[in-house]
Length: 288
Image 1 (cartoon, rainbow, N blue to C red):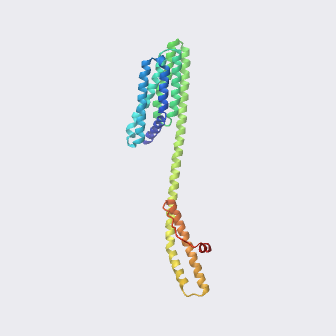
Image 2 (image 1 turned 120 degrees about the vertical axis):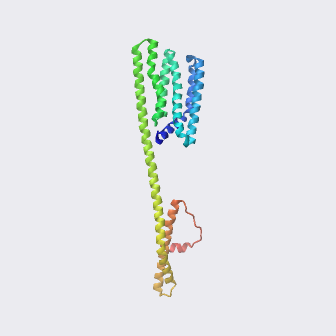
Image 3 (image 1 turned 30 degrees about the vertical axis):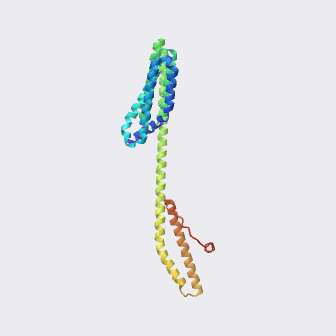
């Protein structure tokens, strides 16, 4: 089993884990409502077994999420618990069908159909988990015509129920395939979004590194130009040449500030920018 398949199994198990309260609530409800039909001993034994399997599945899912190193070992036990949980649930509907009562057959069909729909919705994305969740209910649904034939001795009614069961099974398979395709497209979109984000982050880092390197490379010859401009400004020059040297010095200083701003931009993108608090003359800044 590939790591990607194990990841899909883990996602399906986590979606099932989100429904554990609902499954326990429905299990207690149907045991409480239908115990006169199936008998109190079976209802009590079924409830205890179902609750125990739900607790085990919940514990295994918690281990799966907390310990990535154990996921390889927990894959098949997780699938076994999903299969066992649905086998136990299907056994309740089977016991209802075995009463050969009309109400029991109807309730068994309704429970199997609801379990099929819920299984298709809750386990989409992993074929292994979906197969483990749906197989017991599909088998039960397709066996109900046998009980109908035993109850009414009517081959036509049994065939009609068999065809209805097959149609429901086909609709369930189609729904599972549609959900699987939707999940596959969603995973592909998420992977593309992650790749695009990483590419954008790499481009941003490359741009920041380029700006930082260029600012350092340009600063070296610029310092030479500024040093020569300061020397000329301090020399005994005629007024016109002195004004030109001061203009050259101010322009060089402005270029150096621009380079510092570019370097600060790269620091901001890298998260290393630190504010430099110091006094300045606003009039001179506006004149520059």
